[in-house]
Figure (cartoon, helix red, strand yellow):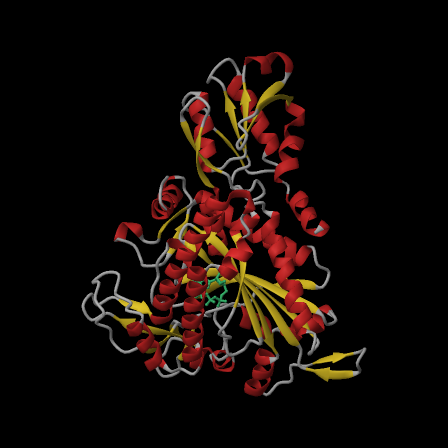
Length: 516
Ligand code: ATP
């Protein structure tokens, strides 16, 4: 079996070969951690955004969506804490001259210990077979217990030191754990320093009147500063939410792992404004709602887990990540944060404007509390793409490459293929396309033998192939082939739209959310 690194490399090359994602400015040797989405990538990204937006905004009476500007008044980033605290601790290796995030070095070390735990669990599961009780094993196996304690101790110390900004202790931790630079293999480290992740730019033409700005590092602040504008114009009552999708920019120290960590990326965020004191319930509720959204896509329950934060950001009183099993392990995909009244309260102070809500039931005004859900669109894209890529062994001994993208998200919903390029078959295929196009994104393909065309569509992630053959001329039926099962059925041309719609229409997927 291919190892995880090989699988990840395949995902990256497949993304390029099939028109999903490439490095930005490639012909100039690329720009580090910046990527371009090509024809299929742009569609997949748009569909993920749309599925999120509809689940949030369209399906909830009390959530509305906005689109605020990327440029914002610079004082906003003072108020939000980003100017002072949006830092990552960096460390350099003096031999390789490579730069690392100090906390990530420690976390990677812990991940290795956790991988050992997983190995022990798998070994024991094999040994004990059906009788295996994972919980009991984790609680009693001395080696595993020791591993767990060791990783907990390390993570706690890291969290404590970062919270106190004790960078010397972060360095000591790296030294004590004998962490070496993956490039030079040496332990010749510099001290740990803080590095602010915001990109600066200037607004205005003349040098003396130009204003220093930042490119927004998150979309959330555009929601906070518009909280009253939206509340007043919508007359929404608390609890209510404001959603937004859009670009964010972070000058990440280490930008690795393809589109997992980018310098320019897109977020999908929702701030839910609530009565102070109700944050615990809403936090739990939103954790559930968001996990359901992920599960509705059918990528497998075992691919997700919650991770509660040890170290809380300056604004939060509770925080959890939804982690996804990427080819390089479980990593953060989405954050759910209970942000208290930190942001609105702080904007009140810095702007001198009241940002309060008059609660008609309580007959009093207050600064609302906020529970936020924040997911990276590009990370979600990577989750979908990496999970979808499968090399399948077929019964006849050959293999096929399939992108099993959830049908609702697939860039192209169907390909229409005339069996041959003559006898009037292309004309019928074009007519079918003209009809289907009104509902779905579809393509026409007549090049190569039909078997090769099927494979091409499988690899591009197209859920259906519609083949027009000589029988079509006689009885107006076509073959519809299903990407995942490869099952082929004959159906009437007039039934194609409904056959496709049943599997790809967003409404059927959204219904699953409503039932849950
Ligand atoms: P990380 O710990 O991975 O740096 P974070 O905790 O700083 O992420 P948040 O500030 O909570 O992330 O941002 C919310 C979401 O935005 C993340 O869950 C992730 O999906 C996405 N995100 C954050 N930074 C990046 C990035 N550099 N590239 C792509 N997506 C990102």
